[in-house]
Amino acid sequence: MPSVMDAPELVEYVETHDLTIEMRERPQPHQARPRFWRTLAHTIAGYFTPAPRKQHASSCRVRQPFETPADQLARQYPTLYLRVFTGI
Image (spheres, rainbow, N blue to C red):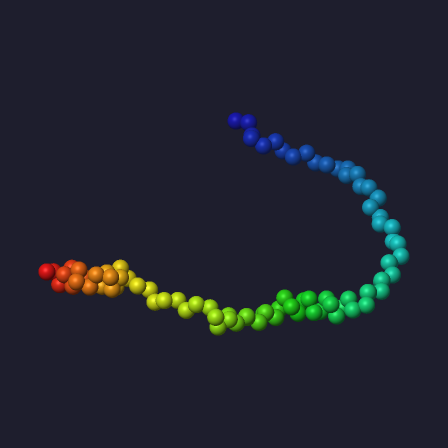
């Protein structure tokens, strides 16, 4: 039975290219703009400090308590409410 995979060929010669990198002068560091580092530090600190929460104005409406359908029936039709829940 023939094999599924052929034997790999041996490569005896590998061509290499000249990969030398030219060494250039290192670029001189630039002078930072005035207040650059202070602005950068302030911006970074802002990411780690939570913003103060704003308080709601006292003029906002207070929510009414939730009214169930049975409560609404008792308020609007007290007689019907008593008849339904007493079984009369």
